[in-house]
Image (cartoon, rainbow, N blue to C red; front, side, top):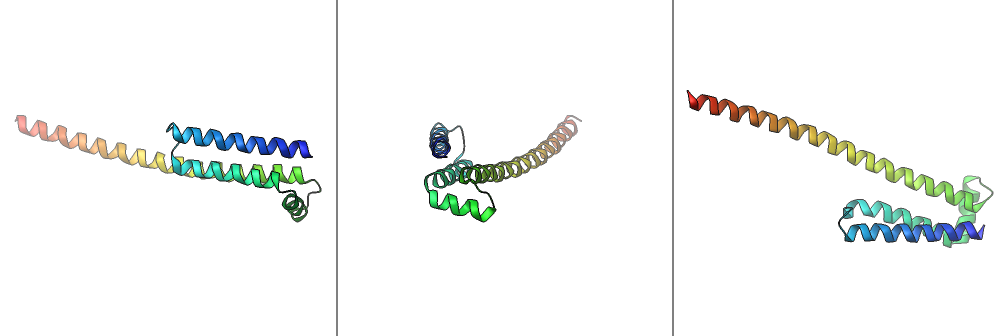
Length: 118
C-alpha cells in the first residue's frame, strides 16, 4: 500500500513539474495548465494524507485506500479531459465562423474588383 502511495506522490510531482516546464516554454497556456496542476495537487494530497485516504475509501465503499486514490485520480483526469473537449469544440466552432466570414469578405472584394474594372 505504501509503495503505491509513494508512486502516486512521485507521479503527481513529476506531472506538476512537466506542466510548469511546459508553461515556462510556452508549450501550454496558463489557463489550461491550471486544470493539470489542480489534478496533480489533488493526487499529491490524497497520496500523502493517509487519514483522508482511509476516510475517502470508506465513504465511497471501497476497502482499499490506494484503490480509492486510483479511482479519484481517474475521475479527476476524466473531468480535465472533458473540460478540454469543451474547449476544443468551442475552438472548432469559432474556426468555422471565421472561415465563413473570410469567404464572405473575399467574395465582396472580388465583386468590388470586378465592378471597378467595368
